[in-house]
Length: 325
Image (tube, one colour):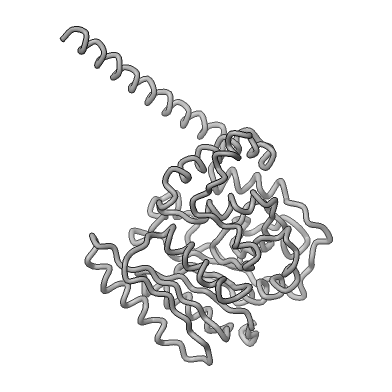
């Protein structure tokens, strides 16, 4: 696999971690893409130590030693994860029709690049397909006898897509109020528990679109256009970015996904003769990745109820104090 050189452009998103950036770049070097887009965020103003870290991460890019056109989009100011990643991908697809996308902590198996490139070509004009994903939580087991399956979810630890699909992305989810008021999530997800989970999550993101995430908005965009994603039948991505320097994953529970082993995908690929989301695979992801369970939802409902009761008690106390001067 190490001799396979791709023709597809690769986009690498970096920030402040030169050590993980170097490992991901070493994996990209094996595939030797002819064009590399590099998206970098700037240091946060309240974190003076990040000036040096960001500079060190960008210095890693200068070590590229294969014949490659390097196109940079470096931000001097810190845009935050949501805006930096989404605007960076906007920029990539303003230049090319399709690309393979990696973040600075997602180390791909060498076969990941060929997997993406072949499927980018195969489904180039199939608007039912939005993304090709290398991250698979079913480590040690397989969902299908084919090389991949289809999902209504799109794990983004190593993925690929087309301009035609990404053009549907909206960081601000402007259509969310209409989708929510019409109850369309039930038509998409079928399951009441999943609907409740995503209803709460998407509402929170809609109210704060410039928070720390960009990928749920991508999932929402795919749902709006009735698109599915391709997920490799083996895990092709190992996330090495967990820990105190991580943006999202710092707790012990999250570390269960750290450094998951990767497996080579076999060629020629075995293509499924249908495009149908794998319901059981999606249910597994809901339960174990998103933690969508009745027990967790009950805890959340009780927490919300207690908060409502506390607010009501405070209101009563204020009214009582007002009337009793």
